[in-house]
Structure formats: structure tokens, C-alpha cells
Length: 159
Image 1 (tube, rainbow, N blue to C red):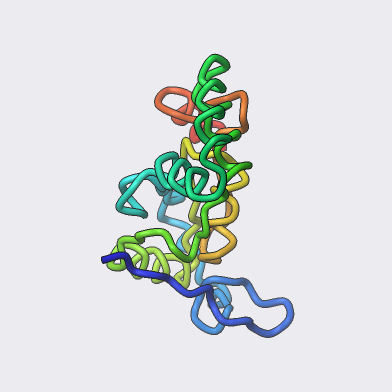
Image 2: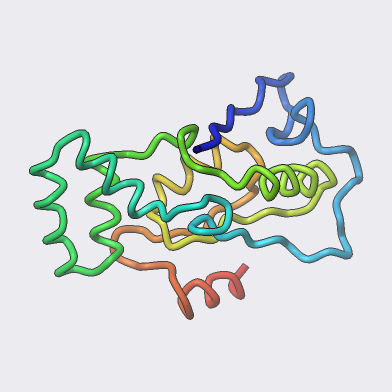
């Protein structure tokens, strides 16, 4: 059974989204704690966004979804971008790990810097980050560059 996660409630102007009431407590930055880098696939969600996107593309436009597989000639990042354009995933419908998401929200409310670091395609990763309202930054694939393995580690070290 999939858990659906509602977007955070709208908060007052100037508020930081994500924390309860939309505000990070003043001066609550966890200066002694390092940024927290969060993987989307098989960590934040109990699935992989590539498969979720492929399923969404198949439902929306089956023939185009099958044709999109040819994008693999240009690499996995190109495939992710192609599938994301055909069948964008609804972030609210993803199977989130509720206990982990609750813990991340606590960390964010305490002022911890959260980065969504994923090999998923950037537009979809940003949609998830925007929906959840707890990530300060997003590191993701871009259609040409697949943000995975050593490449992801290099991106993390570059922040």
C-alpha cells in the first residue's frame, strides 16, 4: 500500500517552507552538524523514480514510452529525461518511507541543511523537493550527465 504525502500547508509570507508552520526556528542552524545528503531512490521512496517515470509514461503514451528506450543510446541520463517528459511523476503519489520523511522534517525544522542528492532527472527531483518543502538544494541528473556513483560523490564534495 502506497502512502501519499500531502504538500506542506501554505505559510505566512517570507516563511521558510518545510518546517512546522513554515518557519525554521531563528538561530536554530545545526552549525556543528554537517549537511545531510538524501538519496531519493530506494531511500526516501520505496522505489526508483526511473521505474515510476517509465510506468507513468506507459500509462500516458505507451508507444512513446517504448520509443523513449532508444534514448539509452545517449546514456541513462537521456533516458530519464525522455521518460520524464512523456510521463512526469506526481510527487504526491510516490511511495515515501513515512518514518524517514518524518525524521527529515524534524532535522529541517531544527535548521539542518538538507540536500536531495539523486541520479533522478532534475525536473522530477526538483518537483519532489518542492512538494516536500524540506530540501535546501537538489543535486540531480540533467539529461546529459548522470549524477550517480563517483559523479554524485564529486558533486557532494563540490558543495
